[in-house]
Length: 87
Image (cartoon, rainbow, N blue to C red; front, side, top):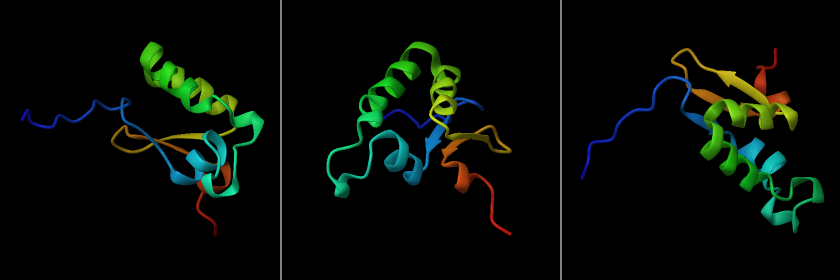
């Protein structure tokens, strides 16, 4: 088994559960996804395959989600209201 290698800064994109179910695929317990969400999961996959994280970023921001870069270069995608801690 090959050793696990870490992705370089800016290559590791994590989508929060809230963003994934809220704005990408829909809530599986609520029935079929809304029409506006159809195909978003495949669009993300194609964007990553074709253009990497920067192509994904364009989609994420187009959909109103927040793209956050952590101190080590890891990227987290979240809902706008989850992006900033409440006071």
